[in-house]
Length: 104
Image (tube, rainbow, N blue to C red; front, side, top):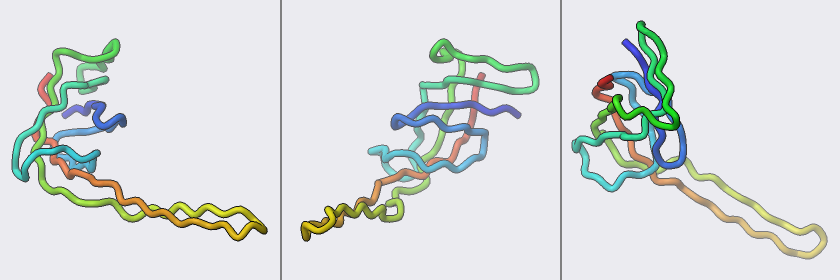
């Protein structure tokens, strides 16, 4: 059984069949199938394939398991001796995906 490196949401993820990953939000319904066309690397027992920049022959498929928010990240700004301070919070929206297959 091999693994692949995919790119989605501006980030790269190392995935194998059966993995659960949390990625940037996808606007799809729960239980729907999705495909990740941007495969950068694929490795298994027979060797390693590296894309330049992408591999066209490898497909990674997944199923949407849930939509959620990440924990809050708090940014606090202040300027000393000026009486200025500001607190800003952010919660990133995420999608949990189960990798169902990697077809090489």
